[in-house]
Image 1 (cartoon, rainbow, N blue to C red):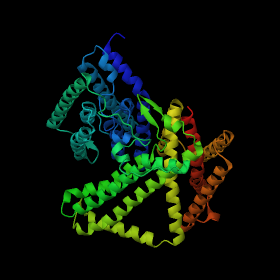
Image 2: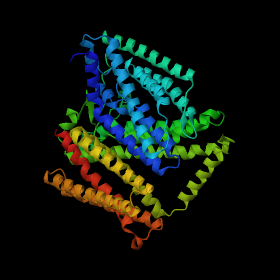
Image 3: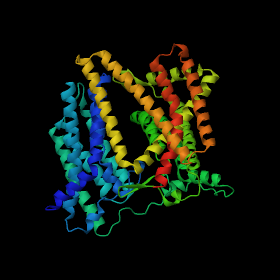
Image 4: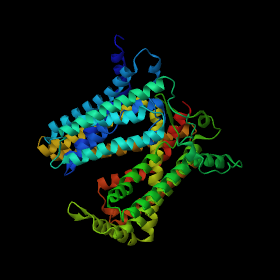
Length: 555
């Protein structure tokens, strides 16, 4: 209470301390796994840490404005309650931006130093701190200095893409990152300019600007209004089920399908443009391999429409008070999102396959002394031959497994979002324990490789961990199923439907295992656990999804 700056720093720490612990633990676990399992482990660990601490700002602070991750949250300064306090704009903007940059840089340095000490592999330390600060200041500048989302999107690309390319070009083999004095001075200048623009933008908002130009009234999926209203058709009133399907399609299903079709068209255009334009080829390859799958993975989440505002997660009053059963609502939400997402994925996959035929017209494309075009064409022929050589039963099994996988992913992410909104503290504790267990297993492998622990003990502990995880999943699913039936969330017809889905998925997995040459009679204990794990996931999703929606719906 004695200093406004200390009070604001304390407030930022209180907001980010849980996320900081999770990021730190995830960086240590993922970086350790990369150093142990990958031949270029140091480079992979470096990019993991840079992604976690250099390219990602504090999401817990961004969530104060509401919005969704896929649209970058709402633009504008998140601490708008500071506008009424007798503190200069330069002070509270500078304290928040400095906290974001310095705390993330400190987390990177601590994580990299610990990994370097544990594995005796050098990682860049202080040479990238200025770059991390520049990234954070640039992103916060475009996010906070304006309430215009178009400026935010364009500004993010203008600022961050050159910084990313600069870092990528400075990563040498063996792993080393060095910036020249002029480059460091330029990044310091970028920090100063970004800070000045942010102060000017926040001062304008403080004197009468709003946090967002238009209040978002989008549906449960959190998509923009123009995307939701892109497809218009009348709501059926003959039954509640048809009306609910219409609502899910309008609010989230059709926007997901439209985004998938847009990516499919974009991929085709990029591959076609890459024929005369050589520098567009890496962009086409990156969009097809990384960007489109990542965007579709983001679209899997939050099928239950959980909203966030001022750090609080909740469901809308409209959905919480609908006179409709929770199990039916959860099933329709997951089913509609899964069908639309699967259609979007098929469109993107077909676009990638058809567009990859344009590679033959690219001509020689040398990367690291090799013709990348011939390698991609050879991979395309191998995939085509492998798929064409399968029987009809295997094709049907692949279709079933792919459909169930999409539905399980959508249901699992929706359930996790709802459970975290209802039991945030318990979920954070569970995630922390899982990360600690992962770190313990990584350290155990390191101890086995260094001769401190016997390999027999390491293998025994890994086998026991797999059995414990499988037993926990089975027992948890049985307990939640009993609770759902006792609370009348699941009726007998729902249980029979879940068992039917489980049986279909199990038959598909057995068909694929037999096609891969795995004989059921010759299966080992590890193969049995792995197969049962995959077969049990659909049943778990069928139970957890309605139970989690019931918890957030009746909060």
